[in-house]
Image 1 (cartoon, one colour):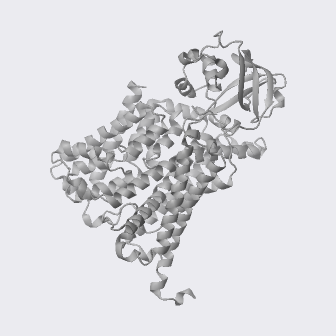
Image 2 (cartoon, helix red, strand yellow):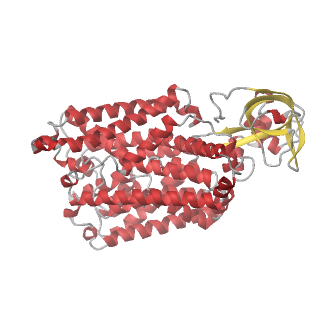
Image 3 (cartoon, helix red, strand yellow):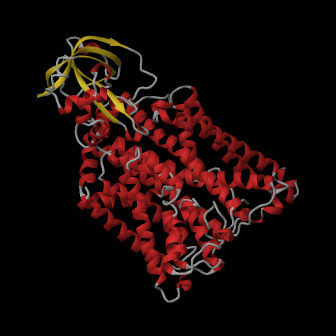
Length: 358
Length: 267
């Protein structure tokens, strides 16, 4: 009965969410069990070498680390969600469009920096970019905004700054690399003879949007309607993002308590493997860019700088959630191009940092 | 019985309940945060500088939950005219992953008693003065600064660890009186008259915590249980710690104390 009130697209999407959730939890449990068997915990439990009090102590460690990440992240998640809701309700795309430059470099740069006045994380950048492009903004602007806005915005820069204790290399490296990669991909798109043909048919767009921002939204009038819209947007987005934060915080805490330090150190120290592992993790976790710095911090003591930066730069551009959202805006081959270029560029940049900066 | 009602009357009920669940979970998250602040257990999870920020987050989450809940209950009639697009915000089922996920931190935060990181965390995560943690300890207070701090009696454990790690023979440190607070941790194969006086350093939240410590030499070391908190006073000396010569605390007095309300060092 409840299903009947949804559009087919939403039903599909809910089904997908269910599957991700189930698969993620199943994989987690399997991974946790495999770890416990491998490091001998199960053996020692069965033979009585490991007391239940030790298990309880480990559980407490896991809980304390998990809650530490979650509590810190909740503050920034709320901030990002409120900002996004206020912009959604009070700022129209038309206001921004008046300022758009006509040439490709100007449009690209504007797109890359627009997040500074239009702070959205990856979930919000897709509908916002699509709305701009369908209203006539050039495709390179949309692509640059899509890829850069989740990092190049005040909320994310602040949370990264806080998480890494003001480390200028991490904060500057994250912002600089993101702008560089986003602008490069946007320029590649600008040389396409007819960039607009890369966009997905407009009829598709309502079906696959992220739950937080419907592209067709009009700014509501009257304080009551506005307050209602802000509360609804914030609450819904808090949930959308919150589940990924919980999953990410749990995985990070589990990795810290269950995986032996030597293994993490060995992976984290190698120039290539460490980058690949952190990039894979970024894709799997699909954490909102507002809070991913806190997750990355959990790995910062064992992983090298290049790997941490790869996680912080690549994660907000490409993850399971973002790529699915991309398909609502671009045709398949364009999405594939974005994914391949972003993956290659992030990997090479991180590798270069590991080999040359250390 | 409910089926007998008109369809139009029946319609809002299934879509309103999940929204109320959502506001309950948002409010619950806020209450969990405020609970940690009020009971003074927040320093067990995050750096003390964030206490006002977390308290504010708790209050705003509660307000958001109230506003969302209020609009959901009151909004049945107002919803129809300006919310044609509301399908985009179709509330999730209460069994959806998002709902269940948000229950986890609330349940863990409210039901599981707050515990500071202790020896179990060191056993699974390693000890800061060896391995990768070195880098962080070094960057917090390097050996150059250690020599510049004038009065070692004001030093935290972190200052001592840094100073003794890089200049174990410095006469300004060796043989000097020392008094530190920490919890008891034991390395495997540690001598009967030794334990490690440890503390965690937390620069943001427990995810970045790093254990440091100094070995204490005292004849009655075995009396102090692992994870118990003690105040140790004595002099800095040298001792054999699991086969290596290290700077140690030669204890004159070891007194059991309750766990401090701020159990970590917050640089």
